[in-house]
Image 1 (tube, rainbow, N blue to C red):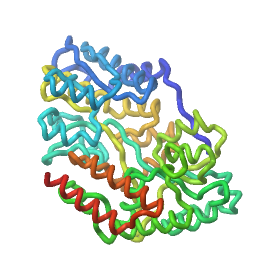
Image 2 (image 1 turned 180 degrees about the horizontal axis):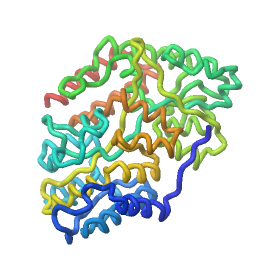
Image 3 (image 1 turned 60 degrees about the vertical axis):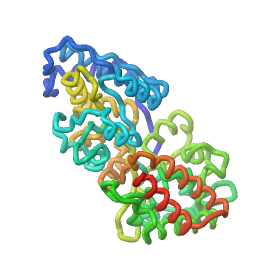
Length: 411
């Protein structure tokens, strides 16, 4: 099944305005009475996202009598960090999950969770990502998960059928062996926690516990996961793109260097734009030994600055852009998934090929948001790649991860 991506046109703005005309936005009258101007900073993935957010901002302005000035940052972390440090931040801004706790603990974010419309409608894993000291600080903007991407031509050539779609990771190892040829590896991914974390989760492990108060790296579950991975790496049926002179799993898959990859729903745009001749299908990642699946969730939130002089209008804007109808319009345009459970059916009606990714919302683990953990996980990535090159073993990698993680958590 080939993927498709819709172009962003004036229809997005028309949809946003039609939503308002239908009275589906509960906050269509600004609590501040209108006439305010708020600044909005986003980290745009490209013109499509910038246009979609601008259309939503224009629709909100028409509904409330306020104005939202949207800026697409060139370097979000740097520009936002400087603005926060300088005491003149934008009123509303994207917050990356790896920066959330830093901003929340430092007092930069207003805890607006109790002012959000129907916060229980956000997928629990996403809401947990942006909870600090038992408070929901900001609204999950949208999200992506991981799934298994299969080249159907390679699948057929190997004599595999729908019955062979892997239900377990052992099944995956079996089909990867059958798919591996002199010119194509069975599966390729980046050698990174953002892919291998899904394997660890399926085996019942992960980097930290659910509320991120304890490092849980050096466990039997994680050891079993990395031993499984090493077995496939040693067999040559799973390769890391770092060893293939390729940038990411989507490139390995799109160029035909790999018959399968583990990637997020963003791969749809890459396949449509860069590799339109590759026939493929998307299935959920297989289950681990306990019978449970694992995946990872990647998300951002809409944050409101604690220093904002327009917090009422800012929260109203956030409630507007995270309403189910607005999320469907924007998500359909830029290839991410709505963070509200109530938007699921409407989104899938336009994007049926996203169902495996959306199903993963029920079991995906969120990225670690602890301050200083980025360096810890970067070291983990480096050790994974070294192991794939014959230097290192799962036991040592996990012991190092545990120690480095505890140092970061307690530091």
